[in-house]
Image (cartoon, rainbow, N blue to C red):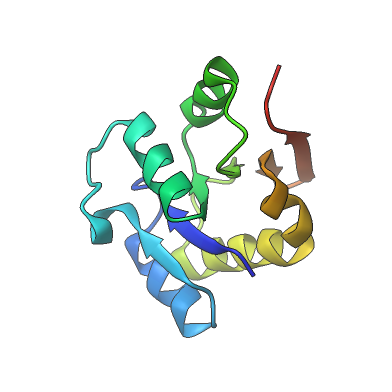
Length: 122
């Protein structure tokens, strides 16, 4: 299963919940990326070979503008979830899209399902 970097908009406790459930996860605040520009968070995810999970729409725009082929980014459009529920959503995405996340994709996860686009975005 892919390692994960959670952007700072996601609950910090979600990273620990994921680790407690066997997923290699770090939160942006845990690795010195608190208030870091989105480009820097994406660079860290790429260097560490982690899937980036975020609530921020800008991440997909940055991928599109740069023509990047990695890292995979998952935009979660389900706010107002507690840290456990958010952890379950992330674990579900990791499990269901494991192979695609390894190849470089932009994912949007909503209550109704997921939309997946291969990188680079056009």
